[in-house]
Each structure stands twice: as structure tokens, then as C-alpha cells.
Length: 87
Image (cartoon, rainbow, N blue to C red; front, side):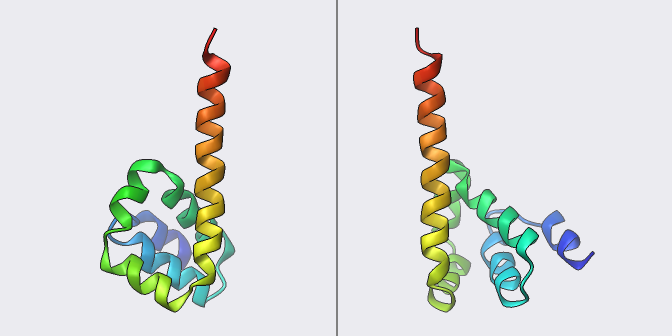
């Protein structure tokens, strides 16, 4: 219930602190949604310039690898879908 309320208010300015909350309090569904939010290219470009993102990386450096992996997977999927769509 609490995680759902937090997710309802996630945006570029709040996703880093919400992900920190999810990591701190072991909320895997909320963590997964937040990482998915980061993986959207336009969101990532905005989020990485927030203070919350800097604090998140300082407090939870292990999340950097997870974010890198998920963002990389999404980029490969977008590139693959573009290549498949080309005739």
C-alpha cells in the first residue's frame, strides 16, 4: 500500500529518492518500477542531473550496475526493434 502511494508520485525529481527508499526498506516491486522509470531514455537524461540521483549513487553504489544493465537492455531492445522494422 505504502509503495503504491510512493509510485503514484514518482517523476524525474522524486524517482531517485523513491528508489533509495525501496532499496532501504526492501521493496522489490517498487525498486523494479523505479529502475524501469530510469531506463526510459528521456527520464534518464533528466534524472541524472538531480541532487537525488547524486545522493542515490553515493549511498547505494551497487545500484549503478543495476541501472546500467537495465538501461543497456532497453537501448538494445529499441535498437533491435528499429533494425527489425527496416526492410
